[in-house]
Image 1 (cartoon, rainbow, N blue to C red):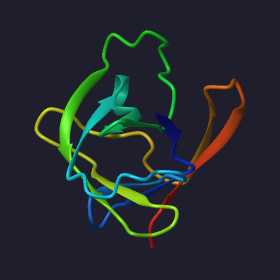
Image 2 (image 1 turned 45 degrees about the vertical axis):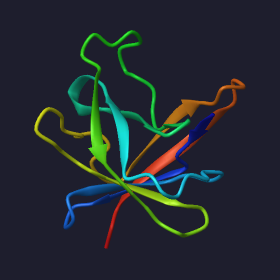
Image 3 (image 1 turned 135 degrees about the vertical axis):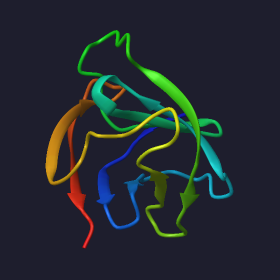
Image 4 (image 1 turned 90 degrees about the vertical axis):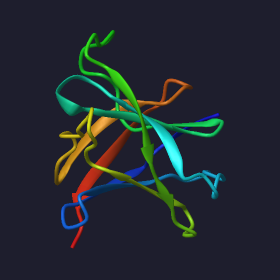
Length: 120
């Protein structure tokens, strides 16, 4: 199943990124497979049978894309929030980094806007 994060919160104090994911039902996972593209672009996160799309690759077929198994936490909120670290030993998320928005395409071809904000 593919879902899209509809909001991204950059928590600088915790060195983490929080993804708000409507429709996400997995609540017990402790790890996920993170996809990061060129220049540290956050592409998505696989948790169990669900892939959470965040943004499209800026390069199309990105030769710099990499995948890493990372620790995650999932809130009990509705919609759920998946928290991921901003960096690990073999990867670093550098985009999004603050207050900004981008557009991404859903599986049905619909274009949506997703925004990132810095946590208080």
